[in-house]
Length: 189
Image (cartoon, rainbow, N blue to C red; front, side):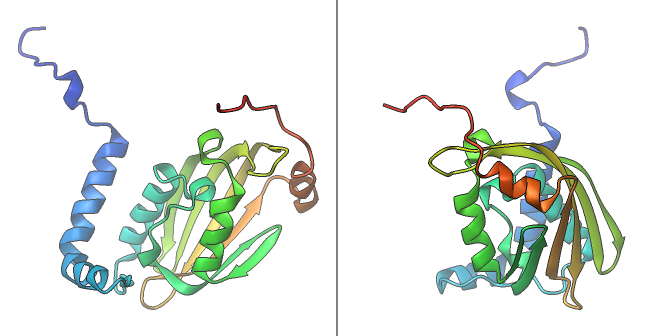
């Protein structure tokens, strides 16, 4: 392997590169405002961010943050009164939505695979994903793999004002899965 230097501990994956690049870009562009807000215990919305940047952040939040099963998303790109619609719920309010996500899936036994995300126009981003997992209910219901399609609508400030999902399973099938006991988990003692 003449001429090649191998540094296995310094390999950069696409996810690591994306996370680092986005964090650097956002910190540079919004750092001062965000730092001042953090000192006051507030979050500053990233108004005026480009639709392409919003798309990139959503890609990171779905692919790396797994936000449908973890609740970890970049709140600064969502309006506080954002509407979140899926076949079984219609929630208005970012805090309410995040509270629901945080108690729904067991993040250690659930996953989201981003199949694609694209900017359609300055106010619309669409994404497709596959998700599966275990719900955080006492009987640990298993959510079989399903595909979802999301439409994000941006307002004039570039923030997400609506997130609407459709699934390849019916709302009834999704609800029935919550009543079906999943595999028994070994106790953590």
